[in-house]
Length: 325
Ligand code: R5P
Image (cartoon, rainbow, N blue to C red):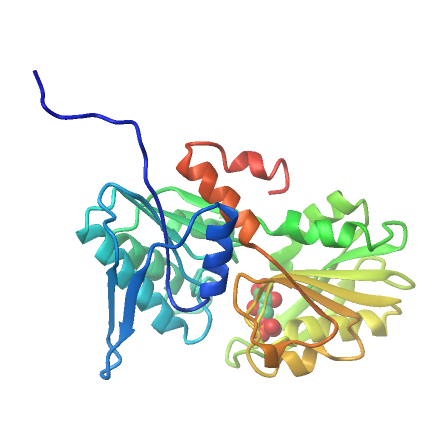
């Protein structure tokens, strides 16, 4: 007769790095739970230390970190948090990285370049992560960089709900600011019942963060244009696109983007007269000084919380999107 007691109880643990504690707190609140306390510190040498305040043995743990600047520090912190969980016998560790760090380095554009997004996935795996959850990956194939399940969530339902009541599909054109966003913009165009236009953007591979617009394919004259992108970094892609749309006779330009990276000079550029409004989510923190009156920030916590619930409960993440992907 075995003396081992078997119970079916599962233990959910949510822990947060220090990059965007509000987001993690919002996720925990949505789930009706609290964050597990952790002592995370940076030593004088800049090395990071992490220890959990409670046992995580046998737990299903979700490690939330937002990869805002300084990206490398927050990435390293999350890796150290995962290592501590692994060594404390957590049963399953899920990396929650709403904005996947280094996602734009997903292939070699030129010889002798790294594929840093793959390196990040490898580091998560080496640290002890069993699965990854992220929102609007820059390229869907990043899912294949991690040898394990990846829950790829889409912010589109969150953003769409905001726009659906505000925009008239009969005068609206959905615009992809470059070739990379065409599939996503096409989904938006289907959902909103509005036509699609595509901007042919060019970058000089030798100069980072510079863009130029070559041509616009599609009907934009006399129409309200909704530019959709996965992220806004310096803002140059969006502002150049908005300028080009206005030059072609667009009535107005509104912008929807998931990740507000907002590196300088994004907030200055985005306040351009060519742009009526910008809507983003809070996958990344947006400090007060980077906010302005025509910026709307939508909460991503309900989406993350629902996905965490589905994963913990062995439910279906796919069912959350119902054809939005
Ligand atoms: C490009 O492929 C991305 O989807 C974004 O459009 C781009 O990285 C945004 O960068 P920035 O705001 O600096 O132009």
